[in-house]
Amino acid sequence: MNSTSPILIFGGSFDPPTRAHVTLPPLAARSVGAELLLYVPASISPHKLDSPPSPAVHRVAMLELALADVDGTAIDTLELDRTGPSYSIDTVKALRSKYGSRVRLLIGDDQALSFHRWKDWESIMEVAEPMVLPRRHATREDFIEGMLDCDGDWDEAAIERWAERRIELPCMTMCSQDARIQLQSGGDADEELDPDVRNYIRERGLYQ
Image (cartoon, rainbow, N blue to C red; front, side, top):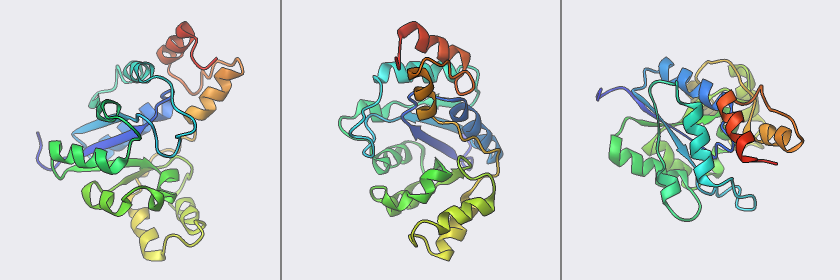
């Protein structure tokens, strides 16, 4: 392996994986010269304990279909192999022990705004400093404005550091929740989902 190219970690429920999930992270990986982009499906998010995700077997299968033609990616099920809620600090520590100091956490800009509420967030910064995808804020200025609106949680110096972590890419706002809502109401969610993922959902009657 290249001793300097980063290893990007992109986690989520992927319930279901959307076009944004399989478009933006690979673009980010190429833009920073990453050697590998690891998708890490969450078992039970500590932020969503009252709404457990779909069975892991389906989420992994859908993610495999979505990533079938995307080079430089892999799926790591270490969170699914653990019991209980998934905490990012445990994941990044485990992957750092495997890949070394090159690991970086890839998150959406909406997650950056609340990153200070993550368990042991300062330790995460030390183990796998985040890179930020544009998910809710189309420009750097919009992102900074969003950080400023976080009830004073971030000071100016911290906001500037977050802005430097942002990767300039097209903003894709679609999310899994939007897709689920459409599917539950009888829609196809064709704009949000890869055709193979949509066929998998239809054949198994998911999200009905």
